Figure: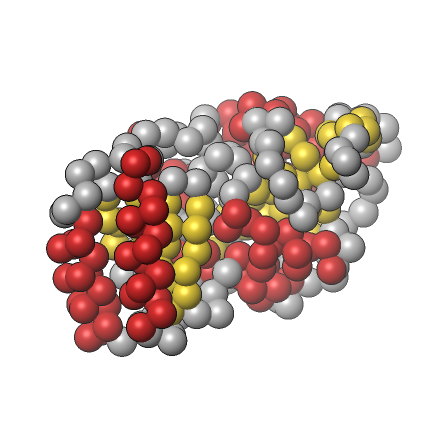
Length: 264
């Protein structure tokens, strides 16, 4: 049973912040190229990063190149493609790849099969593939079956369902593992993790944050393992502003609170 409890968004302490992008920092659009993070939100993220010694990262199914483009002119630590590629605070990159022949085979098979499903779209990410059916929900079962068939045939692959998308990615890669990797190094190490996300792909991150006794925040409705909930993207924007302002107040010796809903 769900209950809503108003509470301070962040208690005094040392936190490491992790944010999903689509559906969390930006509204979901019919096509990924239409997504934008408002300048005011980026400024608040930068403020939050500076006040926490750079312990703020974006964790997304998008590539790091896309994340950098959406976050410009700021340059945050990143985990792209659900953690298959990661960039730390020192600009060091960590990439998990698949064999070139397997990537070529998957690209050929997926292109051929999706061409038969009008309205679906293939997004090639180098070491992963996203099969989108937002514009053709009638093909959901066929897209999921296609992805499962390919993953079952190749043990080095894993399936990742999302909102109107299913992804084929390297096995062992998920947002939880990416958060764990960040938490093992400065400036994240020794801090309490906070992760905000909206999708099935974020549940692995929530699990890691929960085990670390951090703050896991689900955006929008739906069952989740997260401990807290924000109603929508607009609520996330306001929450980020409240947290940044609260930390400024704490540093100034004042007390200020925002609000968050806890999912019990």
